[in-house]
Image 1 (tube, one colour):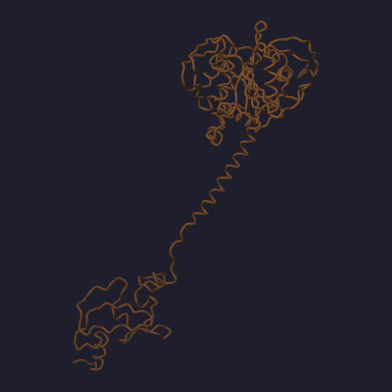
Image 2 (image 1 turned 180 degrees about the vertical axis):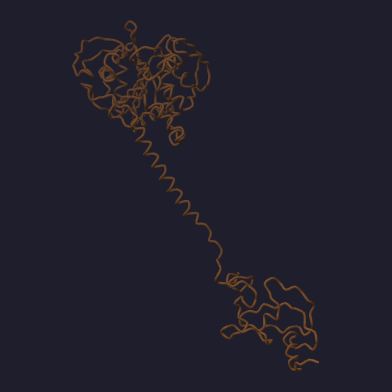
Length: 438
């Protein structure tokens, strides 16, 4: 016989069975989620078969107080959705109204769309900054390598300046810095000193660019001059000799003085490059494409070319511009020199070379060490010279030999009347209409 009063037994039944008339306790049931301010739905009056509670839920008896009533929070309210009486993690869960849920205000919203306009602007500014810094660094590096060794202020009795910018471009046979193996490979011989191997005037004008080759065998008068090294004045003895003898006698300053004296055209800038520098520039560019109209060979220069389009490397390019005995005349060689230099400038003065550091730096490094210019010639002047040469190649100018009227011995005599007309047109920035007879 039990010592507990019947009322106590009824309490136990209430606690476990929630007032069921059955003497056995009810099985576990799923506790419905209770939102704040809502009252739980009444339980089904009939016993339910035991089922596994869903994840995050607790048995019904734990969701209520020990007296069978809804659990009270510490503030006295009922049904508080604080996560403790539902089995959910505080601040989370899967409910639509809880913090962090889709309908809540405490969670992170969707990631904002990227601001592509701002990104492009920042990227463009960064690219321009890098390009500017690289350009400035390249300028100072290249400028420091140029050899400004020719002083045109030593040239006396100069003609008046014209409307065009004029350059005297010289290819010398200097073997400076070349090893014995390189001399043999390039067929340069081992002569000491240096002489002019090619000479041409480039006139950069608004009316068009003109390239005029001056044959090394041109018959000229050596004028009075002041020695570039000694400072001593040498008077004009009216001696006529080949043009390349002026360079051999007293270097670039006397060559400029002789060209000005015999043409009446003022030379603004001087640029000279030797054998090694010329070949190295061609190789740095990956070769220069040229269309050779007629096959020819020359043992002394090492030339051996077939007709047609082909890409010449440094060794082949030097042989091409130096060949003279295969033609029997220096005039044909000067035409080849003009043709090749224009093609070289056309390939060098392109965005693919200028804007690509992997092409620009090797090209500048290959040629600047052996490039000799006047003291007033900057990199911009050098660039303008190359673009003017490129313009001649592109049909924006004219290339020609100095007009020849005959010979004096083995010297080529200029056609004085045509030469004077040519100089006048260049001085006045007029289109050149003069044509050589040969």
